[in-house]
Length: 153
Image 1 (tube, one colour):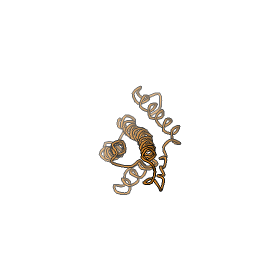
Image 2 (cartoon, rainbow, N blue to C red; image 1 turned 90 degrees about the vertical axis):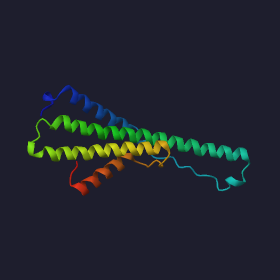
Image 3 (spheres, helix red, strand yellow; image 1 turned 180 degrees about the vertical axis):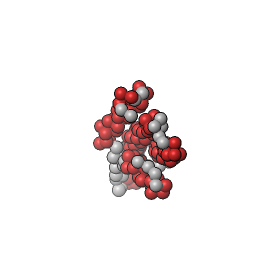
Image 4 (tube, helix red, strand yellow; image 1 turned 45 degrees about the vertical axis):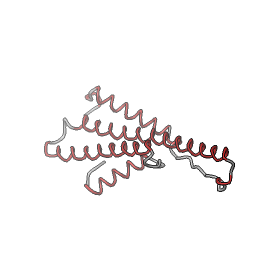
């Protein structure tokens, strides 16, 4: 299918996906969690300094969760858009004997997007600590699905 034959909807989905990937790339430097190192003598500090230290720890944790949440939700959105793009682009021309396999492949990639969004929810809710790279997680999930089912990108 050539570009001139693409639907305006498909072109819009592709433009949005590319734009989101550019946002993710531009923010890549902001993804690594900022470490917090508690003073070893925190128990002996005066109460106001202990409270200040606790505030620094909370601010660091909050910032890490926000940065990870942004990265992970954008990554999940890109994964979901990739599925929509494949469906919009390929399904008019998929050989009927390959349809079931293609739908399974798309369903597995949709699960990658779902799992990435669920991980973002766990980080934002505090159930899970922010990891350093959501895209690595998505690639790992895709690789695991490929190894398990022999399907994937």
